Image 1 (cartoon, one colour):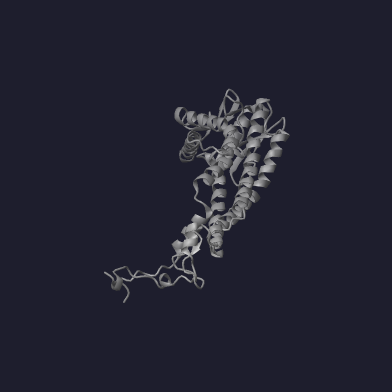
Image 2 (cartoon, each protein chain N blue to C red):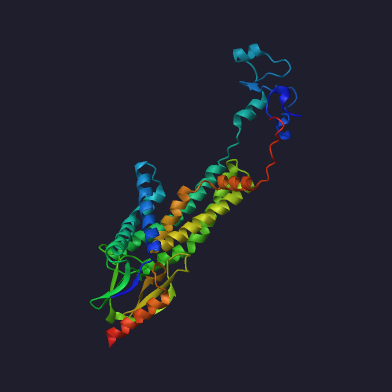
Length: 211
Length: 154
């Protein structure tokens, strides 16, 4: 029976898995580049700063491996959102300028901007979701969390865009503000995906024999 | 003569959304966290405020009227850009109206399922009345508009 032998709570089998270390590598790890478990370790040389660093220390120091991918994915995501909002903002600004000049909504400039917006919203929202997925994965999220979460998130942003477009009867602007608010308030896609997957996971009940 | 009135639940939801949105923008600004999206959307706020102000006035002081006729002019809250920087409401002389038709709103985006009525002008072009914001069904509003147009021509 697990438990009372060491006055601790029962442990799951996977928690009992031992850390597999390279031969000669001390479980306490590296101390300032000194492998405490290596044969012939010269702690005096380490203290004097004349020792040779273990190759493993370089691995530890360089982890996690940054190649700029998260920043690149985040940049793509922001660029897509920016393009969408720039079109919407240009629409708003163009409309206000046209109105100030006495033009109507049927002015070619405004009609053109509406056509641009109509074509841009779907692909840019979906593209932003894909870029967010890559960014989350590079930042350490699991692939299924990132895909599911960002798909749900993109759907919610589109839904908020549609809702905003309906309850504020101003072309483009209502939807843009609805989408912006949703994007601002919703948690990251990987967080949502993690929550959804964990919520659906069939957790084993905690054994009660330690009570 | 009032032809149609706003649905209070929808109108109040719209006003609450506008107020929350203004609070969110103020919060972002005063927390020194405005990003580029904030600055892109900021110029559109006067339009939203103008819409909310006109909607609030109609709800509070005029029994939520949305479409009415006064002095031979059809006045309504449109789906579109404001008529001027003084009011969001459109005022169209009935003699300039060619006919009315039912159609979904042109929102300029992928939202193409909002019901409404188009006011076609004799000079060309059209205005949009968003009937999904109203209490009365679209066909009822259309019948009343046609009746008012026929009365103005007789």
